[in-house]
Length: 214
Ligand SMILES: [Cu+2]
Image (cartoon, rainbow, N blue to C red; front, side):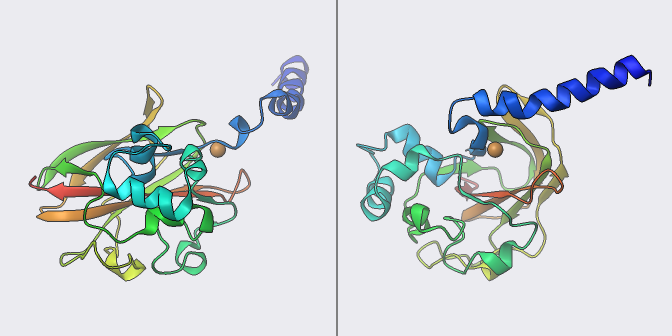
C-alpha cells in the first residue's frame, strides 16, 4: 500500500463518525426484521399500527401500545454477543425480553401465518433498514409445538435449519436460501441476527408464524 493510498483510507475512516452524526436520529440505529415469512411485528406494521385488522395485531397493540410497532426493526439486545438464552427469558422470545415489545409474545394461534412447503428448498427474506455484517440463524419449533402456550427456548429445535455469515442482499433484503424440514401444521420461525465484535455484540430477533403444507 502506498503512502498516498494509506492516507486515503485514514481519511475515509475519520470521516465515518462525522457521516454518522449527520444522519437523522434513528437511521443509524435501524436494523431489520423477517419479511418473508412475515414477522409478527412487521405484519402489524403493514396492517397499520393505529388500526390493525387482525385480532392478533389488535391484541398486541392493546397490550403494548401502537408506538413500538413503528420500531419494528429494533427488536434487539444491544450486547447479546451470542448469549441469547441467558439474557432472554422463556415466554419472552418474540419481544427479545423487552417490555416495549411484549405484545408480540402473546401466545395465540391466529397470528398471520405464511404457508411453507413441507420440505425442500425455500428462500426467506429478511428486511433491513441498515445492513450490518453478521450471522443469521433460523430455528423452527419442534414437533408438538403449541402456539397457545408461551414460547420457550426448549420449544425450538436444538440446531438451526439455516445458519450463515453475511448472506447475500437484494432489494433491501438479506436473501436466505434454506432447506426446510418436512414438518406439518403451524410452527414458528425464530430468527437471530447476531453482529460480531469488534463491530458490535448486538443481536436482533423476530418471530414468524408459518403453516407447513398449508
Ligand atoms: Cu442497525
